[in-house]
Length: 164
Image (cartoon, rainbow, N blue to C red):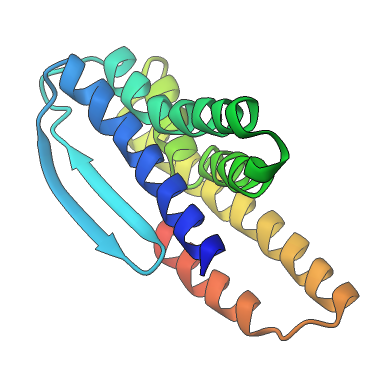
């Protein structure tokens, strides 16, 4: 139960990073959706440039890393689980998958150089490649560890929903 609570705290802090950055830059929140895998906050980026949008995308992972490091510095080894969860969440979220922060950052960067249709194609291709690499890694770990493949099926469902 403790691990689940710490995971939820890490997720909430991540999302608070996005909200804080958007609030500082006066970017309105369109919607907040909470689901089994976390939260999805939609911001109204229609009146801001790609740099401000990228800052909002990056602020969640940054907040997660800072909170993980801060917890480790403040509480020592007793915060290792929380720090580890924060780092793993950040690493996964920075993958260039549509719907993840890394996908948003990639889209912002590419939008500076390419037309929207080209950006969409590149981002979709990177999402598919990233999902396949992530899926392969999870499959390898599960087969080596002899774990139930239910986790793999669950993650495939989540990630396929992100690349559509």
